[in-house]
Image (cartoon, rainbow, N blue to C red; front, top):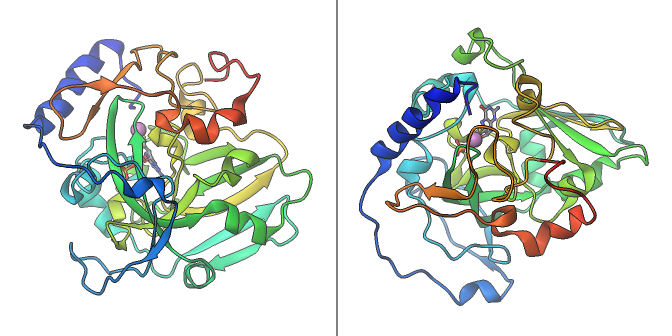
Length: 315
Ligand SMILES: Nc1nc2c(c(=O)[nH]1)N[C@H]1C(S)=C(S)[C@@H](COP(=O)(O)O)O[C@H]1N2
Ligand SMILES: [Mo]
């Protein structure tokens, strides 16, 4: 996603792939369970990967039945420019981040602005596990078991006014702990935005963990957005501010390269990135590429949000 010279792109992609090329594992996936949209309590007392375990219920309503990407890959191949522009630095550099205490400011067009402490947010919301695909604009994808809660629940509590048409998100801006901020690769703090109906869609979550444990720092601890039908960069990490606005927010990526990264950024195999096709993607861990699906496979849930819009224009 780095703003690179076009001729750099193929080689960087080859590097990424070479590291992760390995034989495809043929595992039986758990089909059948997904049909029943159920919330099942899950016992989790021991953390499998060393993080703090979270209490959550399984919500299989929107799960993909595809094989999950391993914890090791999800936490060692990241995009988090505040901790470096390559995929391997965040796993190391993000460990410097202090995530406790943490608070999220709610402001703008809402009846109940304020500063929410993370512990209070966690007390007010029931955590769910949801297994979502994540498709990066750079043509790789993963399947991640997130732990989080619907963003809509938090928005309803804030009581947006009738003027609130968009939601703007901001990442922490703390140069003392985020070594990547020294470089002006983006206009910091990292900013993203959604239309309010996209933010309220039941698929959109704020995630505080993955694989049953508290969010690893490189994945956006302690709280990040997950919008599974949009390219990965919309899923902003380490959120400290959520603002309700009348005007469409300008994201950091749109600011950096407006012809490459539009406001909507819906996963769409029919709309090429100016420097590459979006028809195919490589699931991290796979050998062969697979077809990219419209809205990353979530069309049934979200296509109606865009009725009547020209998605080639609103990329
Ligand atoms: N604050 C912030 N959020 C961010 C990014 C970033 O650089 N900074 N990168 C984005 C991009 S490009 C992707 S693909 C996803 C990657 O999430 P993951 O590392 O958890 O897989 O995070 C997104 N959120
Ligand atoms: Mo990305």
